[in-house]
Image 1 (tube, rainbow, N blue to C red):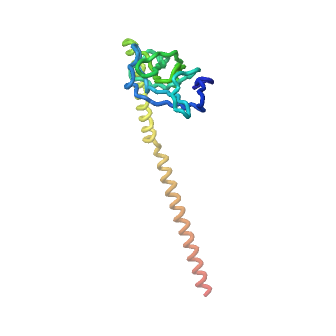
Image 2 (cartoon, one colour):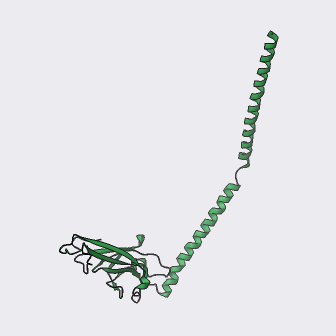
Image 3 (cartoon, rainbow, N blue to C red):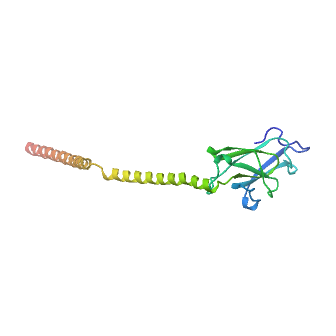
Length: 201
């Protein structure tokens, strides 16, 4: 998000093109000590048009908001995510950031174009074990609930009352008998009509 005046005007230039390119963080500098990189890095560029000259510095506030994944490695807290920036991808600088765990999003202002990535401190070994325990318990509970639901559903199909099946068969038999009876009655009426015609002759 660019505030008004974030890009300084340049003579002869009518607009600025913004590009955001995903980058494999493994091709850039490693995370600073005590941090883990989370998700893709991104290269942000601003280019004047029509000249194509790159914007080297920002004149005002530019805010980036990045979505981060949940890592397999335990972390200290979902509120500890931060944005790292680098002008050339060779060294990272930590920025003051605001994390929104509910949407897995972290936002920060940047001072220059370049690379951005999300980072988070890993949990200490003792905390990592504690963090995994609720997760394992939660997975176990979900598995048990799914199994119970499957058993109840199977029993529901198997426990269909026999009376309902018998009633369905009786209804079908009744409909069949009624249809046969109607046909017999109609045949009798036709035979009586034919006899009356012959007697008149």
